[in-house]
View 1 (cartoon, chains in turn yellow, orange):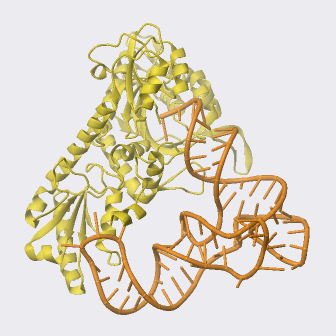
View 2 (view 1 turned 45 degrees about the vertical axis):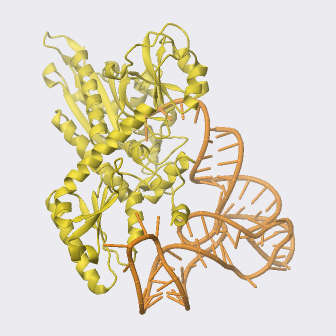
View 3 (view 1 turned 120 degrees about the vertical axis):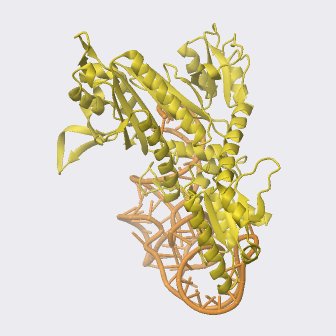
Length: 489
RNA sequence: CGGGGCGUGGCGCAGCUCGGUAGCGCGCCUGCUUUGGGAGCAGGAGGUCCCCGGUUCGAAUCCGGGCGCCCCGACCA
């Protein structure tokens, strides 16, 4: 059996993480390559995960006072060009529509790489007075950034995301909004994805093009690389100035509004894979799994099949009534073993096996996709108990995944004095993921750190900072702040 | 954008050096037997060999040109 597993299994993560990732995405049927370079088809299993992410996030946005809206795919080129830093950041990766209706357009349209410009131009129409503020909108959309090097979910030319865009009457309020959203992202990543990020502020070099400040969630993947998983920007009045987004204040003065924008994308699916996946395949946290419990009937004769299939249906119905996303695999042309492998590859958290023996004994065999230390992977339990405890098992699995990811993040975090770029590079070479160090604030250090492929991921928020602040700097100079270094996706 | 690799049934590949009937594994279809960790046997379907041009009696194979994709590095959610 070991031989067979080896033959049909995935490239082990320790051997080639990148190959493992590509294989797992294809073999778990999360996504596939379409005939268009750099883009992807998200298959039902992958899209199901994304839909669950969307639902959770959407609920959180709504609960915090945001509404959804939709803005156009095409943006006049002149809009993108209006904010100086913004255009600098995006110009190289724009896809431009120059022809339509059989004619060359007078002004080309860009396919949105992000929607700040068109949205704030609309806000300027809608806002006259401070009474019209704040505007708290979000849109679920696709965007396009012409990427040179792409990877399924992690970086594709077209991707799906949500982009929130808000306008406020004061800087404080905008600042608070940006921080609130960062908190929502963090909560979502921890509670739903079981992917605990570090949060903080981006450096000038790493911030969003056009923003005053960018905040981000950075998660540590199993291979020790950091993934920027969500960003929230305080845009100041940069866009408001360019698009005439003004309002009359209580005092009667005309003022520019303060904006924020924030987003997470289908990249999160990639993060999920690289956080929890193992050499058998994907592991989907129960709260995001399109199918939480897969019931596999096992039978020899047609008679047996009739019995177990009926039992499987009953179990599925009972679980569904209890709010569990359950399904049964009634395909008869596949052996049970083949089904086991398939659903494990796809990362379904729990499997219930129902064979003639089990039915006779009033039992089912429960199999966990991941187990805690000392916990049985497979056990036969009375059917009634299984049905009663499924919700609890799923909850425990969710917790277990978060604990595991937390432990890996801690194990991959290096704290202590780092006094040179070379030392930083050595630490990363030795397997460190997040390296905390002091920083002088000099962008030149960031430039030099590129030699060891390291970037400052964040100036971490208070709770992530080291107990004793570092005194030395990764790149020389006086330590003014603590930063988190990593090699990043 | 630089470097590397690859384009041959749905997928993974061999064949190419040395030109001559297009092959293997998996998958797929049919039938029978199976089913508690990737089922077995028998029969069967399925190909503009990436494209264009050249050489040749004859090109998957040799020559020229193009296109596409994947992987590794610099920039980016």
